[in-house]
Amino acid sequence: AQRVTQPEKLLSVFKGAPVELKCNYSYSGSPELFWYVQYSRQRLQLLLRHISRESIKGFTADLNKGETSFHLKKPFAQEEDSAMYYCASLSYNTDKLIFGTGTRLQVFP
Amino acid sequence: NAGVTQTPKFRVLKTGQSMTLLCAQDMNHEYMYWYRQDPGMGLRLIHYSVGEGTTAKGEVPDGYNVSRLKKQNFLLGLESAAPSQTSVYFCASSPPDGKINNEQFFGPGTRLTVL
Image 1: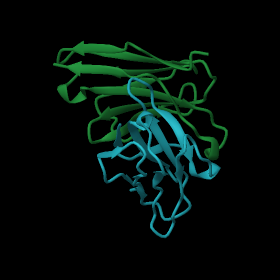
Image 2: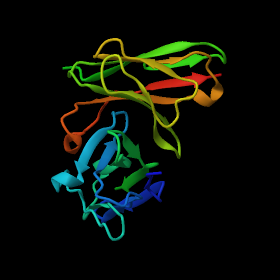
Image 3: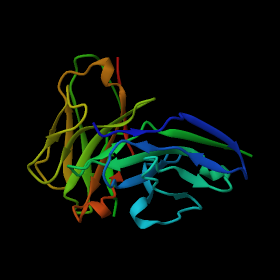
């Protein structure tokens, strides 16, 4: 079955430190991948999608087909980046999103 | 636009009670989804709908039923609540304008506790 793996439940860094939230997927074809974010007391929202090759709030994510990864990176973390981050993959035979278990990012001052 | 709204925000049930969660969207989206969010499990799809009058099972459909009588509403029902259904429930919707643009828009969530 198609799967998205986020190996870290919690990632803690200090403000200004680089951040990398790991995501691995199991689909062998050309996946469509997303990062969603949930800030405290806010609803889940799309952060970025790989097809757009965009940088949102300083975050980027590069698809590495060889490693089947889509890690989320930011060179200098900010306190307001503290949130729950979910990696998601579009199911190859439906329009359903398959979510990872999420990584909570804590950025300390 | 209100986007995706969910009613109620909180609810406490006793085992065996029934209830219905309402999701409404005013974006004219075709697709709607119900997820549950549990610690360490991420978001798991319960049921979804690709249009008015249609529903389909997701990853964890047991113990839940859904209905999509109107395009803007997607109801999630628990016929006989169990403590294992204690969770935060999220509704989402998305337009069917191609997979590339398949962003899902989420509601604020409903926190359900079953005693």
